[in-house]
Length: 220
Image (tube, rainbow, N blue to C red; front, side):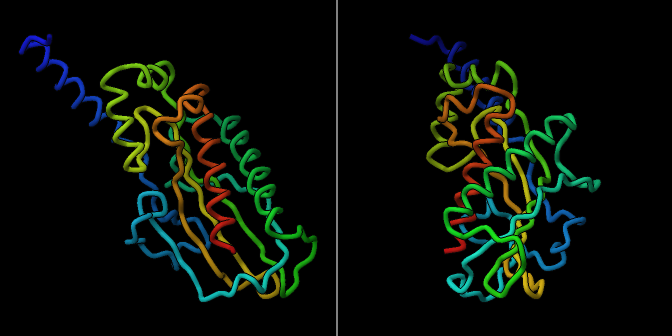
C-alpha cells in the first residue's frame, strides 16, 4: 500500500513526466518551402499530425504515373532538427526517399518524363527528434510511463521521450507545374510501439513509414 507521501511523490513524478513528454517539436509553415504562402492552418481532427495544408480540387484517378524527386533536407532557419547530425539527417532523407517511392509505386507506375497523367511529388525533410536514449525505452517498463503512453496511444499522441519526424509534401501536375496538394506533417509511432523505442532514429523511420502510407491513401 502507498503511504500518503509516496502517493504524492508518485503523482508529482507522473505530472512532471507528462509535462516533459508533451514538450517537443510543433511543426511550422516553413518559410523556405515553395508552397508556404498557400498553406493554411488545418482545423480538422487530424491537425496534430497535419497542422498546415493546401488542396486544390483534383480527380486523382486521372493520374496513373508518378515522378518522385530526390528528398531535400530543409536548411531554412526555421528547421526543426535541433542538434541532429548531418549524417543522421542524410540517413533519414535516404530512408524517406526509398520508403515513399516504394509505397507510391504500388499505386502508380514510375515515370521518367512529365505527362498530363503523371504527378510530380516533392518531399522535404524539415525536422526530426531522436528517441531519448535509455529513458525512451525505460518509459515502456515504468508504471508512470506506461500509464502516460497508454493514454497517448488512445489519443493518437506521441509516446514519452519518443522520436518523431517532420516533413513537407508538395504534389504537382508534372505537365504544367500546377500545385495540387501540399501539407506539413509530423509523424511518430504509436505510443505503445515498443520496438520503435529502440534505436535513436527508429521512431522517426516508423513515422516515415506511416507518412508514406498516409500520402498514398490521399491520392486514391
